[in-house]
Image 1 (cartoon, helix red, strand yellow):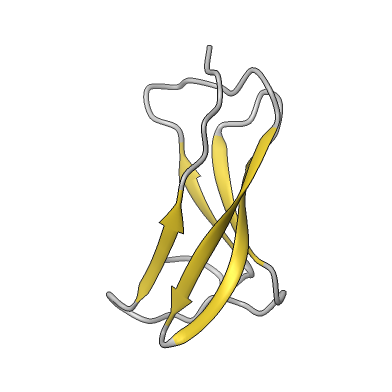
Image 2 (tube, one colour; image 1 turned 60 degrees about the horizontal axis):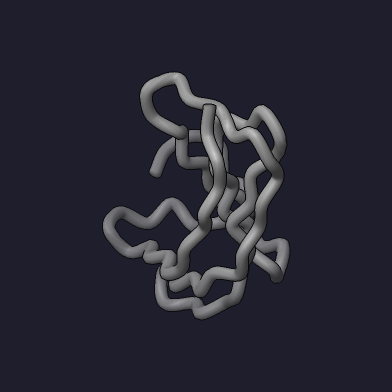
Length: 77
């Protein structure tokens, strides 16, 4: 993890692909020992999957201590 602390982590879609539809799905987050639910989402023409904490707290800058469990399916172009 790197960058400015925020309540959202971003995962880039590889190979310059973009999402063709907006999608979202619940996820389970374990961030530095704190358990919380969240949401994986991507917008139309999105290039990043956003992993958002439901409690609106920022992710911690904790090396090797953040885990997110879930899945999201979306079409790419």
